[in-house]
Image (cartoon, rainbow, N blue to C red; front, side):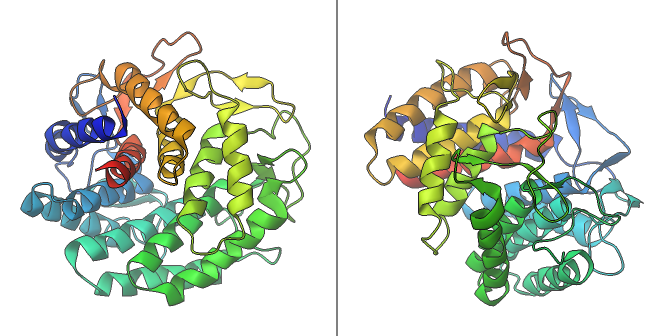
Length: 371
């Protein structure tokens, strides 16, 4: 196989398996989307789910609509997601809560930066899929409220209200991703200040120039957490940042992206998979393998291959085949096994809908680059 073969395979899987499967099994009878299915693809109609899942599924079907899968059905599913987000998932102040009783209202209304970043991103994609610019006004209100309620004097934003520590780079990464989506939806005026805020955090705090790694945990004033029981390196996030930086118009982070990609690649096993985390000295801490770091590795390889890196193209082909075999082939068509232990035995009893956001992002990047 070459990259074109992989891209054609990915498109077939998305159009024939993934989108139809989640269009049928994903919607919750009360409205919005199910949190999870069992490993046979049967619904588990949990009463309460994460707001971020509503946002991620809205993103998934926005991408489906924009790439031409069953336009009427895809648009209806995007509408369903938007109704859930702007209805039961949203607080009266314009921020989004953390947990929702599906179709009814918030069961945990704490505003969490991670959740709100995903809601902003999903609204940006939905505005494009539905050709509904007023959704950009809705996300503008949320961004304004995030700045008012969560902005931190030391830079960036608080994790939540009430504030949690340690602070993390991860929700800021997703604010960067959300700002890129807002920019691409036609509101660079809203996007650029947030992009620059996170660029500054990457330059000054997230990236450790001495080791070339991405730090995850910080004190309130952005000092890296020194406790080795807390601080860790996640290769999946390094791959994710390498791809995100490639989507930015600013070029001063390209050197950082190169080093993060290089170090994440050094963590791979013979199949191209990465484990969950490493210590600062490189020791493998958690050898289990979630699906999402592998999709972020694939996406990072693809964008490197797109610039002419033949090794990255080979890595993408190898990883695509291994990912299909391990994570997808043993699940119902359109689904996945999300987590394997160090011996490649499944660690889950259900299928989280949240993983679809990662798979769709990686596969559509492969299709964009190769077809």
